[in-house]
Structure formats: C-alpha cells, structure tokens
Length: 102
Image (cartoon, rainbow, N blue to C red; front, side, top):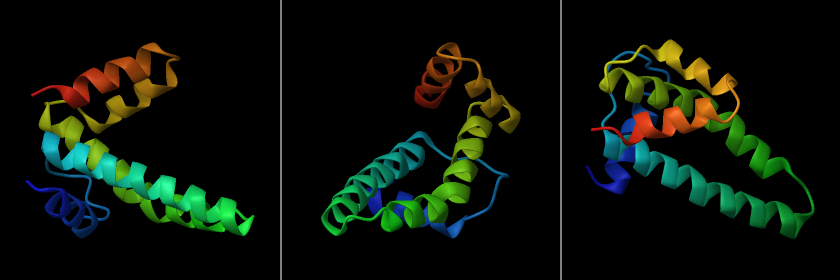
C-alpha cells in the first residue's frame, strides 16, 4: 500500500470501526497526520492564531480513532484495548509495540 492509498483508505472508511487496518495503512496515515500537523503549526504561528491546528485535530479525530481500532483488530485485539493508554507510560509503550506487530 502506498502513502496516498493509505490516506485515501482511512478517509474512505472515515468512521468504520470494524474490519482491519494493515501496518502500512496505519503508519502511513500516522506520518500524514504528523506532516500536516507540522504544516498547521507553521500556519498558526505565521497567522498568530490556533484555528488551523484545531480544525485539523477535529477533522481527523474520528478517522484516527477508527484506523487505530482497526489496527488493533488486525493483531487480534479488541478495540477496547485502546483504553490501556490511560495507564501512564506502560500503556503507550505497549500500544506502540502492538502497532508495530506483524
């Protein structure tokens, strides 16, 4: 799956929490969000406002959550495992390991 195919796939399945997301689909989308976040920070800094970053965060909250749940389904975990992020340090490390898992 290429970069643009992954991004298109995530936005096509905007609020689909069922199914599976492959490792490349998930990580390409994470990279896309990271790059756009950098762009919105630059625009916000140049304009002296925080509107573009906030709008981007609101626009990608549901698809990011959906692709994350689908990624957990791909490694045979329930989407509810996402709540482990509430455990300080251990939760995020465990999730990153799972996201990288084949």
